[in-house]
Image (tube, rainbow, N blue to C red; front, side):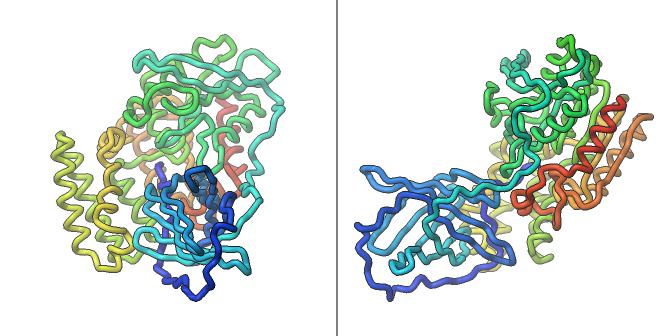
Length: 471
């Protein structure tokens, strides 16, 4: 499911005074160009921040990285150095940095401000490249073959590009199509510097299973516009992948593996195509989407330390917004009605809560994604409709610590739908200790994803591989 990739979540406001007693420094002697590293600390969490500063004839420019969140090249504006004082604005994430240069120690002592909150942040020049440990990522040369492939989605008029990996021994394979979760993904489903689909593809191909993974429309080498697509559009892209695999003489059987929203898409495609022999649902939703998002917001908020009163108020706001979208067909009228309930919510918040969220305009901008084509379709969707129609074998797995698609409710709903539809061949597995990405996790919160070196638990890889190999 979607996560907010570029938002540094600040839980508590800590006031830090930069001080003005330092002797004025001759800024002409300081060349800012280079990488400046600092660490935000709040509520027991540490987040590294890197400003990548460049100099030109017109002055300085910079991008911002948050390595522990897997965020790179966040744009900034107005990089200025006046005397000792450095100022960098990052309007895309509603943040800014102000610091005072300490010549004796060669660092800036300052404050990071975001969403109305302030945290102390000292930054110092670094020449080290921060690389997150990803030990499961395979290194070439691989012990199997790979082909760069393209195929058409004639219905949408786009070309999809992907990688087909297959064993070196044999000429007739079971092949699986990997279908990514929500958000624009490349063929590796890359997120937080993890490449889950590359790791999964590598594991399966080493165990004799061919794999096709592809760039979402408008991503990587695929054509099209992702921003204007909804779930059914993305399902047509996956169906095009099945049609491509059915033309290959080295493919004898085709299966689907869908992760998160991909687990909604997989049943749609399986019911549409007679060429799909089985599907694997990884952290797939089973309950209606509006209930899922309410549950997701509560669990992430609670895990991040939000109080029950605020969680309750947020739940009520979300319900009102979802109901507006589900009952209205006029998007302009929807937005007008949403702004009314959002303004009422915002105005009733305490002054402290408004500071944490940011001003009313920032809050309004945070709500705008609910008006996208994708969201307007998704919020009305009930996965059970397609699950009940499935006749092919199904493996549904989820991690016990998944807070985006909670295992208990969604696996139970998937089981109920398959049973109701008369499916006689399915297996439901909840894997202890794994999060939404199937990493071994402490809390399951999205804030952990980048920090965990494991990309996919070997236990999950083994379960998938063993099940697919028997189909």
